[in-house]
Amino acid sequence: MRLLTHNMLQCHVKSCNDPALNFPLQFQEVELEQIEAEENEALLLNLVGKIDWPALVQTTSELGITGLPPTKPDVVKNDPALMKRLHEILLETNVAQGKMVCRGCGHSYPIKDGIPNMLLAEHEI
Amino acid sequence: MSRPEHIAPPELFYNETEAQKYTSNSRIASVQAEMAFRAIELLCLPEDKSCLLLDIGCGSGLSGEVLEEEGHTWVGLDISPSMLEIARDREVEGDLMLQDVGQGLGFRPGTFEGAISISVLQWLCNADSKTNIPKARLMRFFTTLYSCLVNGSRAVFQFYPENDDQLDLIMGCATRCGFTGGLVIDYPNSKKAKKFYLCLFAGQGQGAKPQLPQGLGTDETADPQGAQFSQTRNRTRGPKGGPRVSVKDKHWIMRKKDAARTRGETVANDSKYTGRKRRVKF
Image (cartoon, rainbow over all chains, first blue to last red; front, side, top):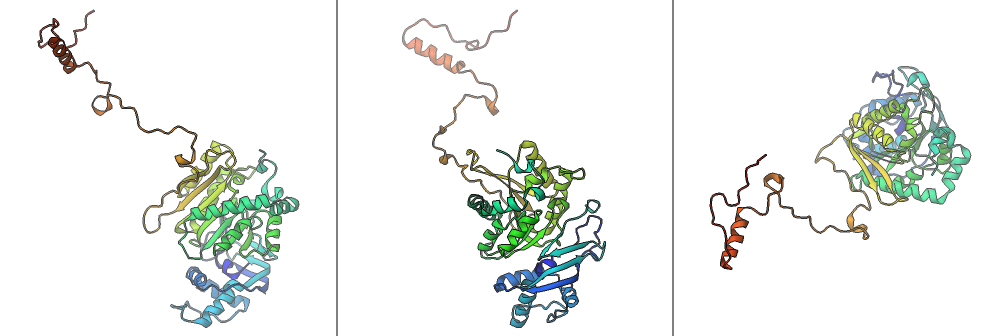
């Protein structure tokens, strides 16, 4: 799973609906993997518009990835170094193993072979 | 035709052998790709823009490959681990997730610019376990889907409804969750090629109200055997389409009497009673 997708995921346990806590999910015991992806400037710009920047900064600092400004820059387009770094982080960094834990309800979503298991138990629906 | 959703729940039905069979069968693959292509067409995405799309029930990534070809990025959800394993082995570009969509989607609001789903919705109508209530699951699914779509975007579901009740249930749930849109039926007169696409609009966005696209093979010229109607019958109606007006009114009687006089026949004199109806007598 790419970090891009992690930035879009929130806990979907029905009773867990505090927006401050159910996003972003916290990574634990993760194994990262770098998979090369084709560069696409238009796509990246489209995605940057959707990214929740504080959450991305928080996640990357927890994972020990550096190279992102703490606040969202106004113009990303004119900064080729930042564009390259964003491409590496969002589209090429994959989480192979580990789990994601919700800060609100504590539900743990295991990630196995790059595929997160988002299934819920009966009492959480 | 047997329906796989009657046999077992999806996570069990699509086991390793079935998933392998499904993916290696070239006929299934081509049908899936064709439907995925049509679904993208119905999404009406802005041209030359690569969008982030959601593939609900991506399976082994057959439909995702079509999305890649069109230059979009996608995230795929499926409930069958075996299917996802095959998708991973085929190195599809999208991100995969093991998820039961009936439990709701866990995405931030306004994430996706569109969603497609090929042959999935009918599975959501199953009541496999005691806690599995189709209506509740559909409602949860459509509510969470609506919120994770960008305002003004579309979701297209190809599915095989079993009967009209199922169709009503699905469309009713979608409407109650705020979706507009409706059903597009391709080739409605063909038994084999007939396909149902539920085309839903999440909000109006900017611009004009979205129009439901026309289904394929529905225009009359495509069916040369049927009789063509050239004009409608012209019935003599009263004002505002009321009851028929009698043709033999006073004018008609006067004309006939004039004609008879010119022929030299004996004709009764004209008076104020000419052409009037007699009083009803018992």
